[in-house]
Picture 1: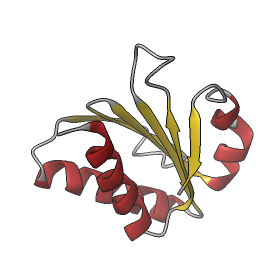
Picture 2 (picture 1 turned 30 degrees about the vertical axis):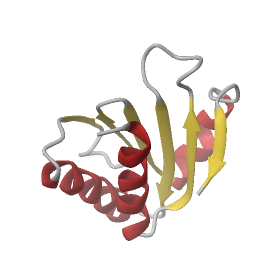
Picture 3 (picture 1 turned 180 degrees about the horizontal axis):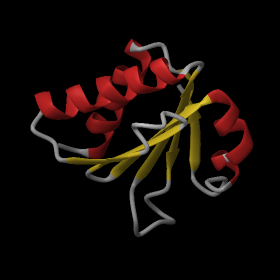
Length: 111
């Protein structure tokens, strides 16, 4: 599966659970770790977990391997799906960590 198709599927999964301020950062030209970062947030622990659950469901439906961190605490859940890393934050944590500033050299697209 090409990266753009995967990214679109993951964005749709986040959007299905009403993730807010979904941002895509294409870092394929500047990073050897991944091609793309997606960042979004929910407004409660339950919503953050629901967004992550939807991403995991999409991965399972498409036989995609993924790694997940932070699910239990639901403040910052990280999902590593092939060459895309999805960060699902609780809103206060997103504001505090401000990952967007780290990816300022990548192509930024608000979804």
